[in-house]
Amino acid sequence: MQALVKAQADKGLWMQNEPVPEPGPAEVLIKINKTGICGTDIHIWNWDEWASTNVPVPLIVGHEFAGEIVELGKDVTGLTVGQRVSGEGHLVGNLSRQSRAGKFHLDPETKGIGIHENGAFAQYLKLPAFNVVQLPDDISDDIGAILDPLGNAVHTALSFDLVCEDVLITGAGPIGIMAAAVARHAGARNVVITDVNPDRLALAAKVADIVPVNVANEDLDSVVAQLGMQQGFDVGLEMSGNQLALDQMVEAMVMGGRIAMLGIPPGKSPVDWSRIVFKAITLKGVYGREIFETWYKMISMLQHGLDVSRVITHTFDAAEFQAGFDTMLSGSSGKVVLDWRNVS
Ligand code: NAD
Ligand code: ZN
Image (cartoon, rainbow, N blue to C red; front, side, top):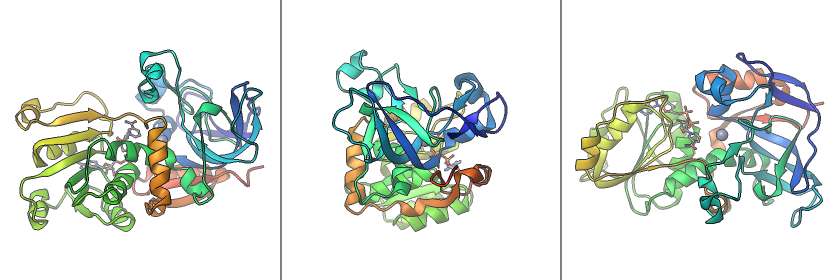
């Protein structure tokens, strides 16, 4: 099969021939139709410090996918050949205290497909049957291919009760934009999203009914005043990984506000902890998706009015992966999808 491989410890990825994986007794083989390019894949492409210390070589990359089951391991029950599926890319064990309590997303032994184990940028992927999520007929392969980052957005946005609350999202990358759409869908009052990139803010306004603010040249406080908000934001979703954005968020929160942080700062960064203490702010780190409650909620929302389709701004044939990565590297796209159906 053809697969996109980190074949050498260097910048880039290489499309090359690889053996079709053989599913174990509790695994399924999935024929890949569409995949999403993630920010993580960009780190791996660039072979930055994080990637070069965490990712083994050679490795088939990619973890956002939709496809169909073509083979079942001998012990697999409840799934059938031909089913359209996506799946959880975090491979978890069942021995830790967290897993045994059903909190699989907190398993310290978690490994990622496309990061530690061979992934989904290929014609075929093997995956534990446990990780498979069936796609209902009314969810397309394009949306199926971005359920992983939508799941990050849903997990973060639903961390705190946001019904009738004022929500601030910092970072209008694909995940921040989807989180804004989720917050709106779930019943927030004002949803404000900040960025410093006008293309990203324009995309956010196309995807959801939110207030975009370019903090490079607009004053967040005056937007807050225009919205008639009295004190500050009740819920903050940090989706940029940028220290300045977190500082601005803390300042813009109400006393007792709640912040969920998905964005990953590049390294240690200074934080004014006294502001967080005196404002009595609750901070929650968010990793991955809740397995499988986030999947349940997001599919339910997609089937009942949540529309994030416009966050997909580009689709390329997998053979044109270079163009797909160039588009992502521009920093102005939404989600970029690769189509694997015509690969031969
Ligand atoms: P992205 O890099 O595409 O988007 C981040 C956005 O933040 C960019 O548009 C950038 O212009 C903007 N930004 C930069 N400085 C800003 C500032 N001062 N104020 C407001 N916005 C600013 O990222 P993404 O793919 O949408 O992912 C969002 C974040 O979530 C990233 O940090 C990513 O690493 C992280 N992430 C975490 C997990 C997890 O499990 N915790 C999973 C996936 C992604
Ligand atoms: Zn991802």
